[in-house]
Length: 549
Image (spheres, rainbow, N blue to C red):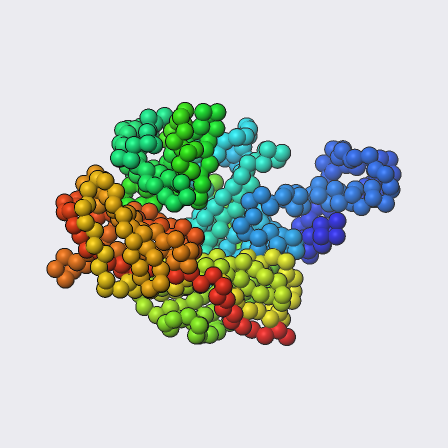
């Protein structure tokens, strides 16, 4: 109740055109066990046990009956689980109340709240239809902001259906930041698409290691090529390559393979999957790892699943918004740090820190054209509260990266006075391979194996021919070894690199790698390790960013 009352107080301070209820009549209604909204309609109240509680609850409901408070009753946590900073700001009564709506084609778009600061712009919106859209998904042909010149500002969005409210709740987020304190923008949604699940049975045999091609020729999908590769711990990599006849489907349809057991239930992957890796020819490659006995069990079926547009409601829903940074000014500041990271090889430094009540960003610069930071886990200690960070690339600046920390559990009024320390854990170093050749002999369709060493680490190699291509797999029993990144062979003095046939997740425990050399026609080959990685899981880097006041 205290948190909610604080929201009410903050909104009263910000709003100039509030329709207040008739408090004298409201008190009379409470005494008569009846409460009415401004429109005169009774509001249902639960049986009250104590008059004091009835007064508090009745006062809150009466205030919520006015339009300006309606959005405050919505629970946004179901879509803000990965945007905790926005949820935290909501809990503290921060953000700009918008409450603007537009209705077209029986669909009402409402922007409820806005968060404009020096890190990002976030809008909380709802989409309410005239008829039920329950159990349906929607997407948009276009969504974004338009500046005063009409330029489209793109971003990310997500939404979920709220069955109780009968509408979608969502957020739109963009890295665009207003140069001044205020900005006049237009929020626009164009053409609402109803999305449904589509599937088609695939007669795939997981016991056949060869490529199997299936012609789909439907809904913009051309064909799908599937093949399996053995993995450590009795697992199987299912690799599928999808071609498209409609370029609009690329990146938007989430085409994937589903394995279904004899109980007609989906078989869960044994490890995180990688979907939608683009190829230079416009295909999408998926990598799914299953337990071997589960996927090869008798009765297992496979189907191609994808998102399909069922129908489109055409139209443009747009709202002119006057956004302001003043609602998130407290606790916002920037500092140019240029702190060298001396524990990291090469010339790297934390260049800048941007702090707002919803998020902290650290901009890290590295020397060279391409840049990686050799740690997997990131934390920010703000006055004893630990925040978890995530890596973001900086578009157009490959020698820079950002670490973003969603702020939660911190009073923003004291944010600027708190000490801050950056913590990086689980270091992964990359090293160049040696000049010792790895001799592959008797190359054929029959898998061959051998073991070599690089430094103190043993590497088990398996190689074989498949569909006129040479596959070279590497794996180490030493968990400190992070894996071979890439191999190559020498053609005269030129290096011919293998193409990675599987992509691992940075810092995971699976150190298996697979390279493919296409159109290979030899029986012997000397390959070399281009580079490899090594785990230092107990390595911790601490960098003080600012002292407390």
